[in-house]
Length: 64
Image 1 (cartoon, one colour):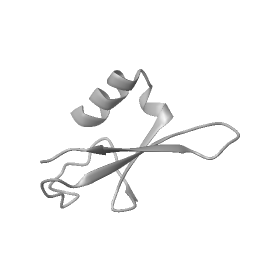
Image 2 (image 1 turned 135 degrees about the horizontal axis):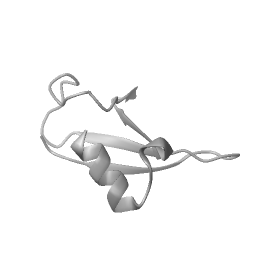
Image 3 (image 1 turned 180 degrees about the vertical axis):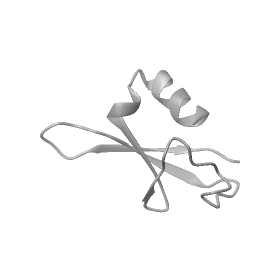
Image 4 (image 1 turned 120 degrees about the horizontal axis):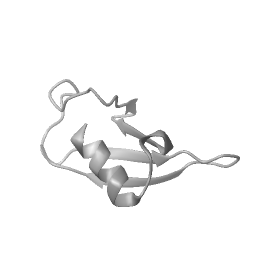
């Protein structure tokens, strides 16, 4: 999705390095806010893949 690509570009990361989740479920690149039943002010969780350690996490909020 545009949001996922924009986040990765802004953070200088590859889409392969990042995982996105909404309500605990993985978000696929083809998912839409309507398919995920997102509402304004919902939050997407973003996890960076790391080798040999626990994943770092940060939150990205985006209203739809």
